Image (tube, rainbow, N blue to C red; front, side, top):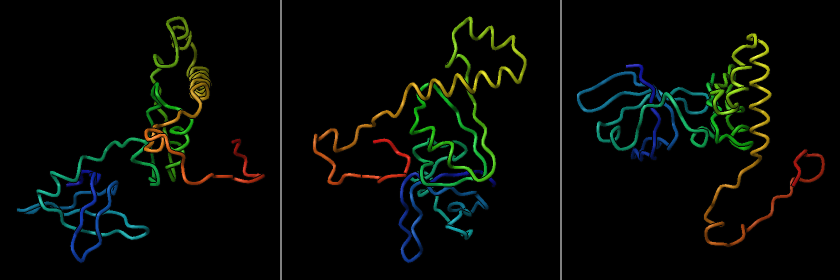
Length: 173
């Protein structure tokens, strides 16, 4: 009990409300045929039971999630792996999903070479932290916004609408 789960595929449940892909839950009990879970639905905490087959087909341990899976959700606290593929879009999504605390984890080998790594390791903790933040921000900014392939890109058809944020929104198009 206490394991965190993430629902990986919608689970239709008859007259009860469906469990949506991406729902995070905590195991609250184990029965002979499945598990009991608790999950947040808006401002409410709901309880439900999943059969063993539903768990095997539609749920995974939920201690870590991709930024893509986390999009649209809010969590109390968050640890973010700022890996070598992080671009501005995924950084924005990742750094705006928490209510309270966020911790960014950076492997300095992803942002520095041999001489830079030696200099970082020789620096004091505050100087090292500030340098890693600056180097990480520089690397993410250099990647910019990467274009992810969509069905429209693959089929070479234009999107059916144009988004114009209007003046004063602060978005350069």
